Length: 183
Image 1 (cartoon, rainbow, N blue to C red):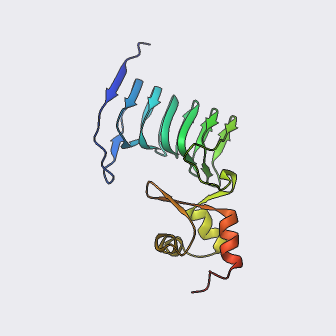
Image 2 (cartoon, rainbow, N blue to C red):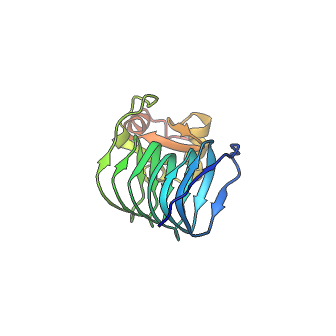
């Protein structure tokens, strides 16, 4: 197997997603932030900046380094996320993970070791108690849209990282105790 390293320079565009639906092999590196979604088969190494999304039909055999990584398909390899790793309900990950924040939906499978440390720009909350928007909606027994509305208005304590909301369970519990859930 002959490996090639490919360097791709892409200007960041928040609303655009670069979809890869092909079978690829080798090293893929992005020097600039990009929203990348892989839906096909990939074997080698991935080094990304920005958001990396592994689609439900993807089959990846690669070590992956990135900032915000979302997995909905099959990945065999080690993951190192500098911001957050999200595992969707259909995710199947076999490999070790290093990330300061992890969001796991019910049904996801992770076989490997997990290492979570606070990054230098992390907030004071415990990363183990971090919830995503959907988890908070279930926790509060309200619609996701209401959670988003409250968080965006500053009424609900949360952290918006690259357009995605994260919530510290302890701060949510304090918010509830203060009676802030009343409309």
